[in-house]
Length: 194
Image (cartoon, rainbow, N blue to C red; front, side, top):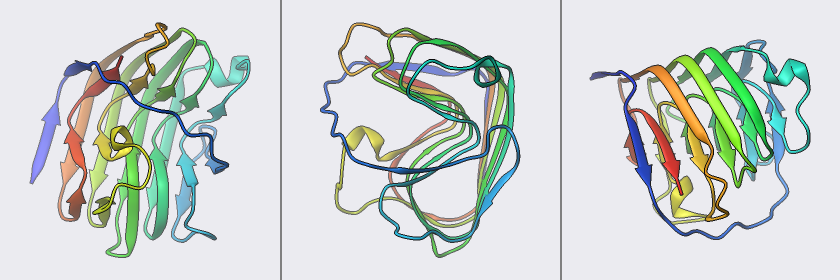
């Protein structure tokens, strides 16, 4: 089964609670990142870009090209771009995320950039490419936040009701699903949760 979605956007208003939990981030920082296993299977996250919780450097704001390949392990997040918890303007040229392996488990997947409780973040992007060849996605039992139990092909902004909504523009979002088990919502574009 193959999907191709061009610049689809969806704005959803929702209330959700943030839970502060320690996490381990594996950052590609624009270089290819490949993972086939993980250490604890608890709050481990793969990013094609950076985890940005403080002021972003010029390198973090530069146009990002990323490649993420996951062929095993249990992951909390798999993001093609950066994960931003601060403010700023961020560019994504292209992200390529490939997830395979019947023993791969991913709770939350975003093909592009992601922001949680941003203080005025703006994403602009050319294309995201998310290919799912196999694996399990989401959870049969809700373990954190229902708004994380999803696969988003493009960018994701969760504002948490803080009034700083941010913006995202994306020219093209590409999704290919060949196989897998899905206990998650699949969104073929970008998503903004207000």
